[in-house]
Length: 114
Length: 110
Image: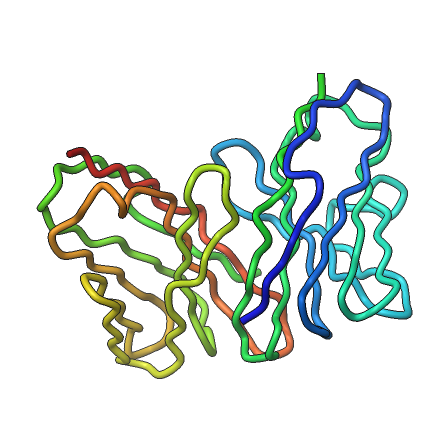
């Protein structure tokens, strides 16, 4: 397993601003993912954060809106840019720590956009 | 596109009752995971099943993977208020990203 810490745990932001969410893992991992969970919904994969190269985005998500950094094997950031109320969600960092086909999640960052 | 369906979507039961939650797909998965998510927390992995027909038990929880590896069930015996949460199934195919079901929201009333 892996211990994953996310910051901030929650935030309230104004429309048009940007917020960067940090994800720290207690061990080196190859596969790191960012998910969005809209209110009352399941998880939707935003992108895979690749170390040393650009993130791989899923359909419907673009780098300009959700820029991702992955400077090393234990850390990643997700920025939600030019926020609107529709971006109000929980954003979750996840890793496949042992490449065993099992995901471990951070506690999530609950974002509210006014 | 691989899709996972879960039923029921919502379930409210009394403490001590038994329940079964289902996860179904028309696609074959190499593995299937069950997660539980409590309010304000991230999903926590409960179990992974990889073999068709496999049954795994975790205290009062019994998980089964269908013979064809397209479906799974989660059975809870004598539910307790601490079992309350969102139960998510996720299917994995080697080399591809996980697919999550829509979830079953369980409420166990004392």
